[in-house]
Structure formats: C-alpha cells, structure tokens
Image 1 (cartoon, rainbow, N blue to C red):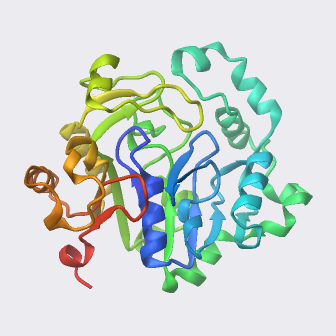
Image 2 (spheres, rainbow, N blue to C red):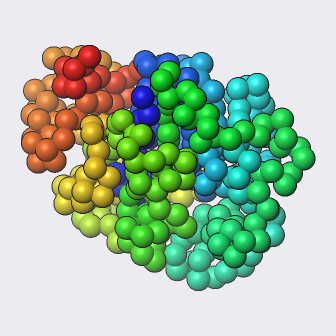
Length: 333
C-alpha cells in the first residue's frame, strides 16, 4: 500500500504528527519525504520536540527513511539528521537536488522575495531556478553522499507490499500552481505534485490522507481569509511560530471553503484533523471517539458531512499516539 500525506491549508497542519502516527501504528517499510529544507515538520515524541527539515517523520518507527528525487537537500541539514536518526536507514535519491551556499546568498539578496513575498531565505527558490535551467548539481554529483544514494522510485515499487508513506511538504495553498500566487513556494504541494516528486504514478497510490488543523495558520505574506488580530489569536490559545524561521504564524478560524477547495485539488480518500483540543479543551489526550466531548464529535460529524469524505484520524495532543483512529470503523479492515 502506498499512502500520501498532504497538507490541506498553508502548511503547519500537523503532517509530521500524522506521518509519525502512521509510522508507529502501521509500521510501513519505507517513508519518503518530498520538498526542501525550508519546511520543518514537527514531531513531539516522548516529550521531546523534533523538527525535521529533510528526513520523513517516520523516524519514530522502524521504517527506512528516504528523500525523493524531486526534493532538494542541504548537505549540512541532511548529514545532521542522518546522524541523529540513524544513517544506516537513510537513503537519498541520486537525482535529488542540492542547495549550495550560493543559492542561499542569491535568495537573501533578493529584496522582493525576502520582504514582499516573505521567503524563508533557505535558497530553495534559487536552486529550483537552477534546476529548471539544468545547472543544479544533484546528489549523485557529491562523493560524500555516495553511501546514501538510492533509486527511490524503485525502492517504492519494491516495498509497496510492505507499506510506503510519502510525506508531502508545506500546504495546498502554497502550491506554485494552485496556491495564492505569488505568495507561494517553488513547487506543486498538492497530492499530484507529491506523487510526481516521489516518482509514483497516480494509479499506484492507494490512500491520500488530507490533513487539516482545527484552525488556519500561515507564515509570511499572502491572503488569509478571516485573519484574527494577534491579541484575539492569543486569547484563543492559537499562537504558534514557524518551525524553521521562528516567525509568528498568522491565524484565522477554520475555513470551510478552503477545505472544500483542498478536497477538490487533492482527491483524498480520507481526512485527518489535528489540534481538535485547541477548539475543545476537554478533547485533550483522548484516543477513543466516545471519550470526546459531545460538541467536538458534533463538529467533526458536521465537517465530514460538508466535505463528503471520511474523517478517520483526529489529533488530540502533540504526541503521535494522541490520535482517535477511526480508519477501521469507516474504511473497513
């Protein structure tokens, strides 16, 4: 089985937590990360916060950890994470692109990108420009990466019978093509783009898990419908900061129209909702549907009816195992 995990909003919905839960619960043989080190996926595991910028969030389980051919890496970030999470189980596709210091400097010198767009300044856009112009050096061009090199699409096909999770990056509305252009990232972040970046044809994908948070956040410039003033966000307990930049996230209530659009763009087979406990405090830490507050269950039922897709995974706290898992009840064994 091949499962794609994709963010339905502007990033920061808890993809890392959901991916980590799948790693613990389903023990997939392989996890593949797409994207680039401008996005940090946060996992709180046994009380310790981990921010992964290159490797997939499946490190909590026994999975092989791989970086997709369409991804970008920075050597210092890649080696630091490989050392921390077990180099013996880390692979990078030989065709993955490599961000070099010149890319970082070029991007940070671009006033339009840094100030008007709100780029993270990690060199990702500049590296993608070089890739399009066929100038970018790839993982296979760096001898120090040779112990890690692999054909990741071939690995996916080899191991799909034992379970493969492909972890997307950022969010649907940061997609270069389908997002709030020009306030977007430099790649397609929808499920289709994630599959392409990993090297998987659409008919090989069995499950698409679309992840929403119980409220909406975004970092940097661009529209955010219903944006709340910082003091109101603080009153509601919704203050967050970007995992890579540390910038405060802008905040808005859950937006049904954005959610419906994300469903149309990603064709999910199931939906995950994180931070239900941010809306309903009594939901914190619960792992059974019947233990959730009645009003929380009513909201989830309402949202499921509106989106016409099963809500199967409900996050109720920061740890990966703080999840109400309704997959068996809604999807069958």
